[in-house]
Image (cartoon, rainbow, N blue to C red; front, side, top):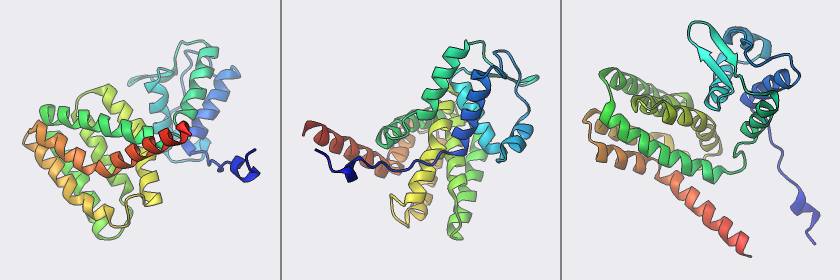
Length: 245
């Protein structure tokens, strides 16, 4: 019989994004928001939820990715035409989406970014290069000043995804990257000096994209994310050992 201490589970702190999604789910399942209804503007939602607009935007992006919301640039964001039962089940799955499977998230990010950077090297525009350089320099400035550069790191990787010109890959990376980077930085998985080591790696990635060298771009991202990939591999190996016992 298991000791009681083995049955104790860590307390999960719900993120602001999940709380927003949860409240929208409640509004939909209660019938206050019907399929086809338009959501209030991001600014109004942010004020009502008491959070920054970036959290609202991320929640809407996740719901759009799964087809639960649709946005018309001219008229706003609407609840999709799916039935309330379907909406309820899918939203519940989004909130639970791989929360405990950190290894799978790391692996998914690794392979998605390899694909994204290869496409970015092939398809990037001059504006993409400007966006990448700006994000890279902002990251370096904050890192060199020993400031938190999590957002700048995210923006660099998001700029790569945008340069791929593949909206599905971009959407998937937008979903994965924010929580992953925050978790990695806050838990210091790769050590205290990882931020400064990443600067040279970012420059290698940018140079390969600028030169439109697809192989070099893939190799640069593989090197940049290698620590995370090895952690993921080790996690899967450990899980297999546990399952075989």
